[in-house]
Length: 376
Image (cartoon, rainbow, N blue to C red; front, side, top):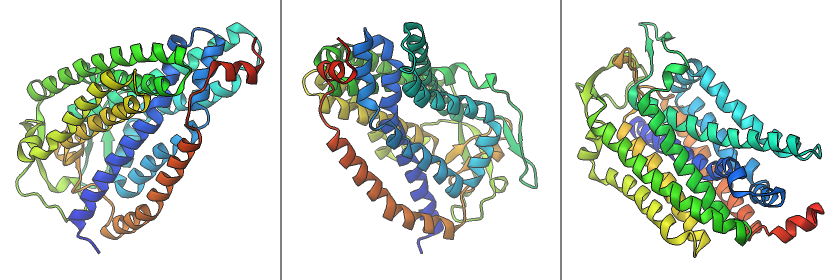
C-alpha cells in the first residue's frame, strides 16, 4: 500500500482533475445556454445551438457527480463542512442545474413565443448562475469561510449566504463567467452552422480578452491585497485527520507555494496560452480554438489549486480549524481502495466519452434543423 502522504496528494490531484473535467465538459454546456439569446437570433438558430449540446449534456454531468462522490469519500470533513455551511448556495446551484433539463424539454411543449422566450431566459439564467457561483466559491476559499471546530470536532458555521458575495469573490465569479462564456462560444464556433459560428468567434475573442484582464486583476489582488494562510510549525503529513492538531499563521503570501515550487507557474502560463490560442485559432480551426479554451479552463483551476495548497477550505474565524490536505482525508485504506477503483473506471469513462464525441462530430446545420422541425 502506498504511503498515506502520497495517497493524500494523489487524491488532492484527482479532485483537481475532476473539477477541471467538470468545468471543461459541462462548462461549454452552460456557456452555450448563457449565450442562447445572444448567438441565436431566431428560433431556427436557437434550435441549432441547443442541438449542439443536447446529445451530450447528460453524459457531461457525470464529472459533477464523480467530483461530489469523490469529495464525500476522500475528504469527508471537507464534504461535511461545505455542504452544511454552504447549504443555501448549494441549493441555488442545484436549482440552476435543474432548470436546464426542464428548459430543454418544456420550451417546445407549447407553441407560444412568450412561453418559449420564458424558458430560453431560464436556460440563460441557469448558465450564468452556475458559472458565476462556482467562481464565487473559489474566491471565498482564498478569503476564508466562517466556520470553526470545537474540541470534539463539532463544526459551527457563523456566516450567511449573502456574506459570500464579497468583492474579491465577485471578481472570481466574473473570471469564471468570462472564461466559460469563452468556452461555450468556442464550442459553438466548432459545432454550429457557419453563420452562427461567425458570431460565436466574435464573442469568444471578446470574452477571452475580458477573462485575461480579470484573471490578471485577481492575481494582483491575491498577491498584494489578501493575506495568505500557512501551516505554522512542523507539518505532519501522515497523521490522523484532525484539523485541530495544527497551528495556522495568517499573513503569508498565497503565492508562497509558487516560490517554493517554480513548476506551479506552468498552470497560469497554460491558462494564458489557452486564451491566446482562442484568439488565434477559433476562427480558422474550430477544434484548435475549442482545445485552447479547454487549456485555459484547466490552467485556471490548476493555478488556483496550486495557490491554495495544502489548504482545501481555510477558516476566516479560526484559522486553526482550516481544512488541509493533511488533516481532512479519509483513512489510508479508503484512499487506496478508491484509487484502485479510479484506475479501473476513469479510463472507461474517458474512452466512452471520447467515442460519444467522435460519433457526434460535425456541425449542426440550419438546413438540418429546418427539415427535422418542419420550420419553413
